[in-house]
Length: 482
Image (tube, rainbow, N blue to C red):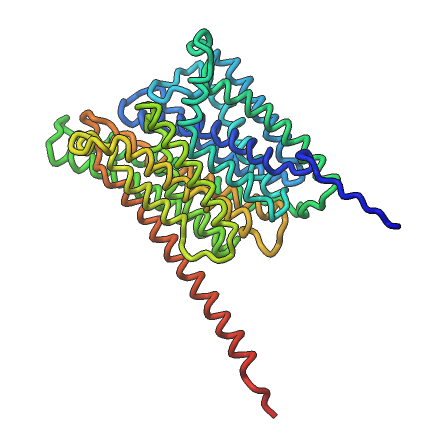
């Protein structure tokens, strides 16, 4: 008698949930460190000669480092992430505290070197997470991809929860970002061990060649961003006053208008460059991923500036709705029948939520204090949760090589960070209640424009699929000719 014993696999044989938790921790850390640098770049535009001028260059370095991870597709992803997080911890030790944590203060010269080390560590951690997504089986990639999106969206809530969890004697001496860093180290080490065990039992995708060209394109896009910001700064400084030393109202207004709309032009130009290369190298799925990130970058800056600590009920509501939106988005990305472009829907919701945080709207409609965080987290959750999960499954097909997939995925963070860097002064000034306020609808209109681009890409994809189905049906129904 043949008696078979079926052994139920343990949690160590299914590392994807642990990888999702590790990706969530990395996403929280990237949002806490990287978005703080972006906000610092926006504040640098308010004060001339501020030492925080190093923040844009450090942010550009972070973008290039994220893309550079695509050059080493043979390295295991999660050990790379763990080593990068330890580099961030070393930078904190050198600086005497978390680097680039407080977004509203200047960046002294003595902390520039630790900031560079921290930027390199955060960039390698984000790139290593995308590398780990590419090394996972295709059917399971949506879990770490959704975890990374959840960390980026829910970072403010996660920071508040960690701060409330700390005992009173440690709440002031220990930073929540430091706790998040060491939690991320522990989880990524565990994910590395489980992923190594999975590699011994389950076939992994082929590695392929290093993705050199996407890295070069990201470097070109970063150089364009820096060049655009330098040209804008030179024009504003040169033409702010007339040669005789006077500044009239029209001259001042014209310079302000140029300084405002030139940032939108830089963000759009960089986004188009990355979008063009993504479509050329990875087709429609890669172009859709890049277009999403171009709009999600400025929206994440708005979410980073939102303070959720109004009441415990509001924090609970934001957490529940955010988790629900992210979960639903990840599940929708797995469904083959996609009736709506949910990434575009999420960007539109985020764009609607942005003006609700202004002082004028809050004074007229006090209920927006509670509605804005909910709309923002639901919109970003739908957009990034759906977009990243769908990109992890569809980008790079049919090649299915880790190097190709990672080389296309890193274009998204480049578009996100560079677009947010260009529009950071607009975001900061739009949220300020002082004399530096900019038009409130500039960034919402920009985000809505990227949502329209996503809708057009979705409609184009559906039209092409319908045409192919009709051609196949016509070919099967056509009778053979003698």
